[in-house]
Image 1 (cartoon, rainbow, N blue to C red):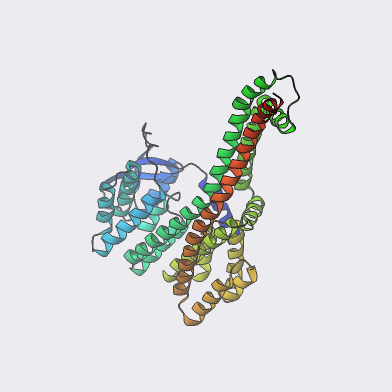
Image 2: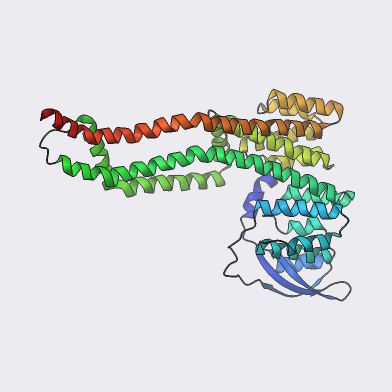
Length: 414
C-alpha cells in the first residue's frame, strides 16, 4: 500500500492548484482574511473550517500580467528556510519571523506565499500544515521534518538541518546537471552546424561543381548526396528528432517501467553512470541522515528517502529495504540484498547501527560521495574536451575536404 501511495504522489501533484483569496471569522469572532492555495473553493472552505474559521467569501486571486515573471525557485525556499531558522534561534516569534522574511524578499511570488503562510500561522495553524498547502514547494519530507520540530520544540534546529540538507542536495544536483549538460550541448551544436552546412553551404559548392564536367570524387559525391537528402527532407529529420524526444520524455513520465529501464541504462553509461550513481547515493545518505537525526522512525524515513533519491532503480531498492526493515531486519543487510549500494556505504551503515550513530555515519558517506561527484565532474570535463575537439574537427573537416577535393583535382589536371 505504501508503495502505491508514494507512486501516486507525482500524479496528484499534476493537478493545477490555484491561489484563492478568502475572508472569514475566527473562534474569537474576529474577522480574518488571507490567501490559500487549493484545487477548489470547497477545498479552501473545508480547510478553513478545520482551522476553526467560519469561511465567508472565497474567490480566485486575479492573475497579474507579471505573475510568471518571477517563479519561486528552490533557492528561494532554501534561503527562506535558512533565514527562518536564524530568526527563530534568535528568539523572534514565528509569525513575526515569516513577516520579516516576506517583507525583505525581492520575489513578489515568494512574498505573497509567505504572507499567506503567516496569516495561516497567526490564525492558529501549525507551520507544517501551512507549508503543506504548497506541495509544489514544500514536499512531504520538508513538512514531516517541520512537524517533528514543532512537536519536539526544536523547530529552529530542524529548520537549520533542512536548510543544510537542501543546500547540499541542490549543490549535488547542479553538479550532475552540469555533467549531463556539457555533452548534450555539444551534441546539439554538432547537429545545428551539420544542418547549416548541409542545407546552405554545400549547395553553393555543388552548383560550382556542375560546371566542371567531370566525375566528382567519391567523398564529395557522398557529401552532396547527403546534402540533397537534408534539403528535401530536413523537416522530416528535425520533426522525427524533436518528436522522438517529446515522446521519450512523455513515456518516461507516465511509465514506471520506462523510468526503471532508462534510469538503469543511465547508471550503466561509462563515466556519466558513475557520477549519477554517486550523486544518488549522496542524496540517499543525506536525506536519511537528516530525517533520522530529526527523530523520524526509520521505516517512515525510508519512504521519504525513496522519493528523494531521484532515480527509479534506487527508489524501488529503497522501498524493498523499507519492506525488509519493517519486518525487523537491520538496515545494512536489507540494503546489501538490493545490490545497488557500494561496500563503503554498507560498512558505514553497519558501523552506524552498531554504535548508535547512524546519522553521523550517513552524513560522512554523503560528504564523501559529494566530493567524489565534484572530482568526477571535473575529470569528465577534462576528458571530454579533447574527444569533443576531435569529433567536431573530424566532422567539419571531412565536409570541408570533400568540398575542396574537386578543386584540387582540377588543379592537378591543369
